[in-house]
Amino acid sequence: AQTVTQSQPEMSVQEAETVTLSCTYDTSESNYYLFWYKQPPSRQMILVIRQEAYKQQNATENRFSVNFQKAAKSFSLKISDSQLGDTAMYFCAFMKQGAQKLVFGQGTRLTINP
Amino acid sequence: GAVVSQHPSWVICKSGTSVKIECRSLDFQATTMFWYRQFPKQSLMLMATSNEGSKATYEQGVEKDKFLINHASLTLSTLTVTSAHPEDSSFYICSARDNAAVAFFGQGTRLTVV
Image 1 (spheres, rainbow over the protein chains, first blue to last red):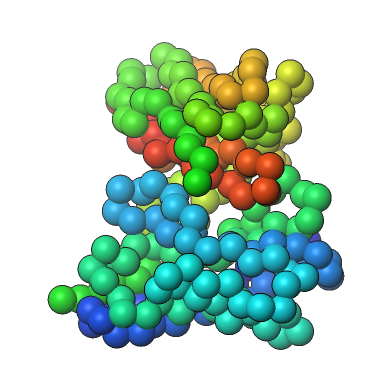
Image 2: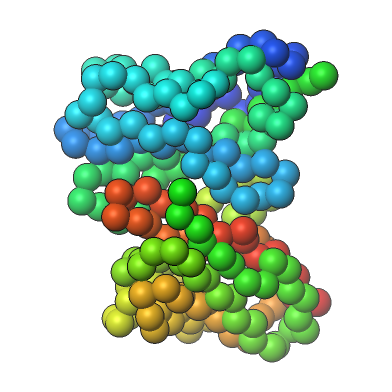
């Protein structure tokens, strides 16, 4: 069974700083997808970024980028120029290709301070 | 991204009554939808996978007779909490996947059983 581990329960940075959230996963699959979701205080889950395992290039979405290390089974999220609105719970998630279910990590609570 | 609408956002019910939560995919067809439960400061716990036109697949430990799931059309799944008790009070979230294997989430429903 696949597992996803987020080793940082909480993080806090100042506005405009860069922050990196870590995520590691365990799988024997070679084809899969990785995701980062954000859950702000409203509790609406929002997709931040998505990575296909077969792609070597790291995904980026504006201020959000990932460092995908397939051999190390690591999938960290970097937030540049952090903003107050980035304050949220961040969940890393795994889904093997052809599967239906997402496997979530425990989450990292990120606070951006003014 | 695709839009998933969940209703109601919050509901208070008396112990022993039943509550229905709706999940709709507004701009895409979803043959599969998912129902999660989230306890405070924890990750999402998958309860069941809802398949259009067939029976839902429940995760181990989830009571099928208490949490009734119906997926009558390609855009609507419902979760009915039957004979609700205070311990059923929680935050319930639905999600649906589009053709690109990305899961989009509803706004969530906060259920309080008094």
